Length: 305
Image (spheres, rainbow, N blue to C red):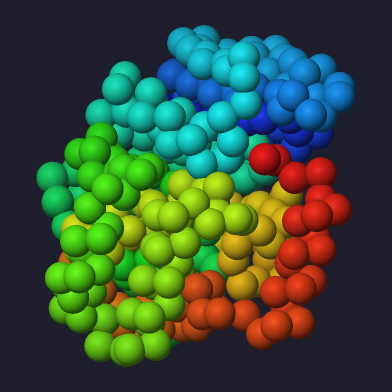
């Protein structure tokens, strides 16, 4: 049953987005809800009140029988550490579940999709996560309803404790991984290898603009050859994306599509064609003009970090 799947919602200071997210949860009525809220930044006057409003927006919206557990920070941890510690906490309490951020509005089909695939691949070590967002279209949408790549997308996703256990915020073994050349065994393209190692290096050295957790998760998937499920249609709408890290300019409030009975791929295997499309759109270095625009957006955005 989809309402039996535990849900973690990660929040900060944006109560205005949470109304839509909580409305979606009210339709599903999950029996377990975990809420993790980061603390206010000391240099942002009034943010403590915004954080309180966001926390109240979640807890006050739970009108169904539900075990609600909260983890609210007094001090600000930042995007990277807050999300990492929130998911750590979640999987200390449950063996599998769904993770939503405060601007990711899921469809009912996303919960059905996650529930079915969490069960189907529960014991498949090579599958590390299930995404609800289709940032790119699969090259073969008529054959099945999802496919596998080594690239995760975390705008509404699900995973298992067993896979998250491979995640490390600090990436302590990255220098060894870089020297070993293991990445050549996963990606034939020198362009892909160079770009991924560049991104991992920036995260490892805490370069400016890389207060994140999703690149560490990408590293965990790549290092462990962990496949990520991408749906053929979009099941989650991101209503607060500010282009902080990815090369995308047209996905805000993406249309949610639907499917009926799931058509499963015949084997667990990376779709290299889909992977190439995903890399070119998401991870390839953006043109200079796009990078400047994204930097300006970050400077003037109210953001979530």
